[in-house]
Image 1 (cartoon, rainbow, N blue to C red):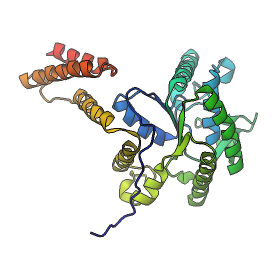
Image 2: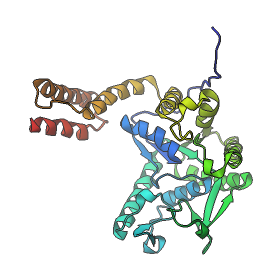
Image 3: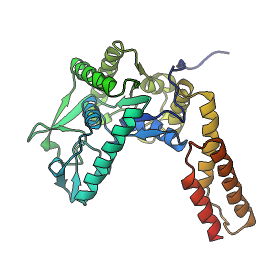
Length: 330
């Protein structure tokens, strides 16, 4: 039978992700697409402790702060539009309450420091080579927080600069956690505000820089999320309504490729059982007062009991509480 597409086949990676090994994901929003899939299956994963970050310079700075466990103070925060925020963090960390912002940011830094120290693997996703600096003090900006464009200077990174700065950081990462495996990937999400040509230029810089870095290290590899979207799927039916972001079908396809490369069959088997419990929690009955719903709740509590015996390393306390509360309502 003739093939009508150019499918990308991936080799199995030598460091599988499982329920006993911690993994950190950091970078652009595509990082969250895959990282959250792992979280949904209750694997030990930390996703974007600074929120979504797009350019290599901002991701590097975040990792340096995490390694050094450098907590932020009042002087590191800014106040605009009735909210306190950090230029190193995504707007999801912003709040009208200054103390709340400080506590949330520093709590995530402390958590990420300990998590990265014990992690088996670190997945880094770059989204763009373009970055911003505050004109008033030349400070790097990870997120502009919807402030006026005239406050920022927009620049594009050079390949040599990315390679040299990341070589220094990788040495630091290897000293911090000698067992750490690093996987780079480029987000397939197109930055259309840059224009077609500048977006392609940006992605090209990222891809070349990453492969320049990889060839120097044995513990670093590349996952082709960008290539899977652009070459394997390559059709607008795999895009969301904005024609820029991958839709759920595309994300699930790349997720399947990711699983094939990084997750062993035993872990997949366990995750399928976890997934059934999670889906049951999200079930909303039309008639919660019925005996059938009562049986449904008790059945899932029994399933959790059996899974707790079989896999004591997985925490089902949230799901168990949900089913117990639902029973009390009947």
